[in-house]
Length: 601
Image (cartoon, rainbow, N blue to C red; front, top):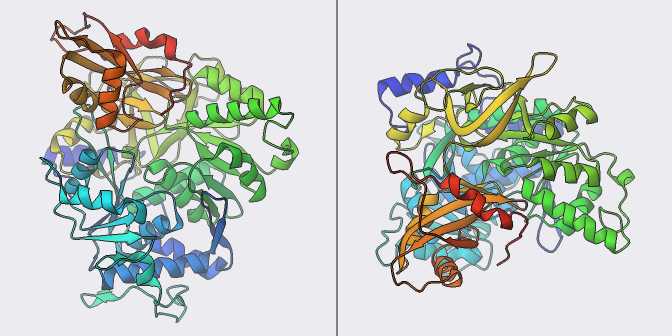
């Protein structure tokens, strides 16, 4: 794997993957690879529903484990035979939540290739950088994004594009001359494959180099990009083992078994959607209910219809559900919509909530309205997904105390694959005690394989043999001695809007490109809808006549709505450190009046 590290950093990274003295090569999962998981469930539960997908018109598509496995292998054959994808290659996706996207992911993992998912809401220049940096050779693109994707790959103006992309494959839509269509390519392929020893080998992955092209647990599986304080996206390398061991840890903590269903309403270009509500239920032989997108009007209805037991959400969605409940109550309906009652939800266990900033006020408001347990948690792409949760065994009263009585909602206790600690925020490697604030650090089997082609970031991140999160927090112990962790803010100044992190430097580059702007700082301010929203603090050049609307309009032309500033405050002084570095966090209180404002396009 191309982590590009020196000897010392390699040692530090390795030690950051050790958990309670257990080395990462001593695997905690019984499976040989992700393909092995599908094979087992196809043999033992082939007729059982594996995946349910809802499109935007509320139409459902269902696949059994046997059907899903067969279609995955069809796609894998196509990749190997028609596209020349091999073990160790990378494949990019430019798509959204769909059965096809899930099939592409698993087909890559069957081969031993890695997936580099793209967020279509990002700006073209950033996507071009990620495609180029990922060294992906093929890009699967939903039909409605084909023209945009082709322009990004080819490059425009001064952007060099992504010349490493050898072929773009259209997914969905009508087949076009000269363009390989994913569905057309699979149309005539056999679908009789059921399992490794089933005897039906016609849709199995072909032999390669004299032997079966079998992936291993250490093969790279995902290359996901996360913003950095330098403004340059960093590629997080996750192995098949990372995905499986984190899914195992999450399912065990959440008490998810093969007879349960998890619903996905989050985008599956992000590790939360991929790991928690796709890989995790499939790991235990359960069912994933995949939504094209979150729909507040269908949320409770689908939970009832499909017997969903858990859903993973971000705090933003809790706010939307509260507002929906208020509207429904005003119309004389139940807070769940129409005639749905709490009794209809008797099978529903709890919500998993993480990825964004959950406030005590929001947790309290949701609990009071719905009386549904929130299992708050925390994790990062660099630790595969979740690293800790509130225990599911807590009583309602205990759960509420940990959510509401300590100024910050607790993110809970470490899950089995990893351990957590608080270290001095100065990077000295000094571990702190109970109640002391410092940097949240993690080590264990779900820690990434490193940042792709970023030796500088790897050296700093693993400096003292733990993964350094960049987030500030502390822990308290309960009467049983368990550590309950809390996150209080970020040492790194990323803006976390609804679980999507934006580098302030990216936004500031656009601000500084506007004629008349002398200094422009991007500030993440508290917002009940998204945890944080994007604001801009601007110092104008002498004589400049810019107003707020002009700056916002200029930003919107060059950045997606989500990333653009929603509020602009003008000033003349900027707080700086003794070395002259801007202190953006000291500007947050100037945006306090917009904490309860929902900004719309």
